[in-house]
Image (cartoon, rainbow, N blue to C red; front, side):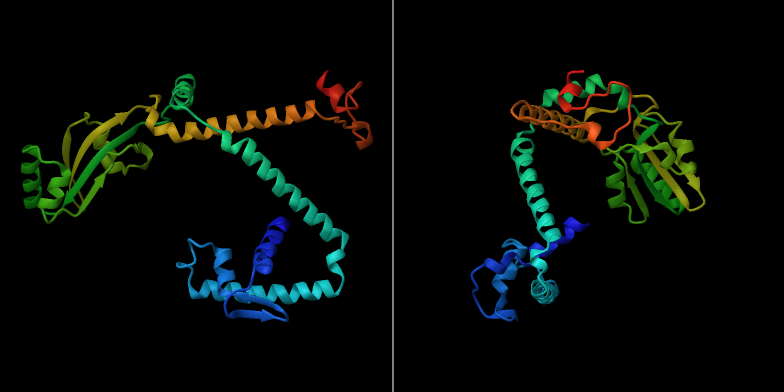
Length: 286
């Protein structure tokens, strides 16, 4: 939270060193805020979509920060050791983040073969935990409309076609994408019928609100392994996290190899087993 506050503070004064151009939007003593400077902060791509309210709020916050900053400087807080330490820490974190971006994030690459290998070697983690279904559903209220829909289905019309042609179709469920529906999420009155159906077949059931037509397009039983396309994004996330950790450890180890590093655990007052190493080097070689 403290670091976030500092970043916001720096953002508000981002344009302090910018060349002033155009009439002032706000002014505190000799410091001027212009529209161009505000647009620079929000970014050129967003300057046209950022509205009056956002720019007004920014200008008001800028004035408040200018006043507070000048008062703080007047009281000598700019030279406060705490402020210097926090700014130094923030700079250190930003520089480290930039290093990690250059040395790790930009070098993370994943191939299709890696995804496939991870999927095949960890298939036990990609099993369905309950029965899952893909199905379509359309519903009408009257028995006459029900007979029309049934006739259309016997003529091999799709649910989508019927929903467009029969004006009294009240609802359409289309669960035929890559997303399977867990049986625990299917209404009980529908699940009873769907669970007894064969893939590719359709059934009509009458409920209190009307006539429901169901078509089962696919089913996966509990324990079945999910298709790769269903878990691909999850696998990519896991591989990236693993590679990021490996590259981080490689970077740290390479830096340690070229530096003198020592941690005196005894100075921390650490109580542990007898013979606990005092330094990082002895701990690594243990």
